[in-house]
Image 1 (spheres, rainbow, N blue to C red):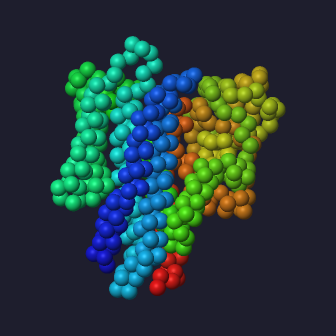
Image 2 (spheres, one colour; image 1 turned 120 degrees about the vertical axis):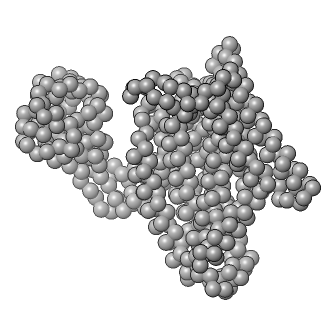
Image 3 (cartoon, rainbow, N blue to C red; image 1 turned 60 degrees about the horizontal axis):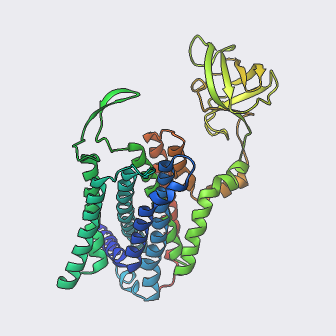
Amino acid sequence: MLEQFFAIARNTFVESIRQPIYLVMLGIGIIALLITPGLSTFTLSDDNLFMVDMGLATIFLCGLVIAAFVATSVVTREIENKTVLTLVSKPVGRPVFVLGKYVGVAAAILVSAIIMSCAFLLIKRYGVMQTARDTADIPVIVFGLIALFTSLIVGIWCNFFYGWVFTSTTVGTMLPMSILAWVGILMFDRDWNFQMFPRVETPFGSMVVISGSFDPQIVLALAGVFLALMIIASVALAASTRLGQVMTVVVCLIVFVAGLLTDTLFGHRAFESKARGRILEINVIDDHNDNFSDNGDTYHIRLDRGIDISEGEEVYLSSDNVGFGLLGMGKAVLKNVSYSTADLVKEGNDPMKRPPLVDDYLIDGPQRVHSLWRIAWSVPPNLQALSFGDALNQGHIIPPSHIGLVGMYSILYITGMLSLAVILFQTREVG
């Protein structure tokens, strides 16, 4: 069974990267990334931050289109052309067929995402030229052009002399060449000085980093995009077992929009808890154990808004504004309220997970869950949780542990969608 599975996955991968739409969308994505520095100059804030946001969105959107078209082609076309009969009529289970198709499609999407990500990392290093005295980053131009033209030349040469498929040959060459181009800009700075493994000063002290051009936060943000594309691929595959190509693309677009808006559309109705303010500053006045768990522990806080909480009114603490991250069932009250500042005083001896910190929220009580809205909130994939552009723009740190959590969520969602795909395809008439 494993041999059959890998054979299906390998053939699906090769068939996917051979499709003309694959290379066309990959080329459109790279061109769109190339023009983002120019478009980013029209902002009234930090142009480079806007360029990063545009770059991540471009990779996401192009990957979405590739996922939709590739996934539908490898399943729908085989059903319509009856070629699937040659597989399911043999001792190849339909679950093996579906899973093999998904792995092949996911690998093809991952290849395109890696190529576009390398192009994005080169462009991020180049940055936005905001003044006339800014100089071009020559290593970025050199390594980028070498990767691009080498891929095209190899594709044309092998197609003309050996009859190899131009699309798959070009993509197969572009993958290692784009990675090498990224490694090249990690090795050399703008003045061609070697910059691998320098020792730099960080908030955590002096340490050795991979390169002066390596930004781990961008890599983590790209990992979030990769996970989102894997989810979209599973949705596309499940839809393609019953729908044609056009309707599958429509379903993917609907799921994409719903996934980005699921918190806005359903989340605030599914989990009812009113935020009363976000903590901007905090100072300990009285807390012997530094845990905010003892009756009378007092912190002085400043909120992001005028306080509309009466003195003595109970509030709860949460790491988010809807109560998912409730710090504990311990209550607190506000005293000495003065516009946006007050003393936060613990009531009772209920233990807290940790003391309140900057960016925590005051909420009006434990989260109240509405079952029907929660079901509606749970059905679309929460792509907003996998989009880290806003976090980068606001200067927040993306912890690797969070990538682990959303990675587990992605695996569970993909497993659910593939299970649905198997169920739908199990009763599909293909003869």
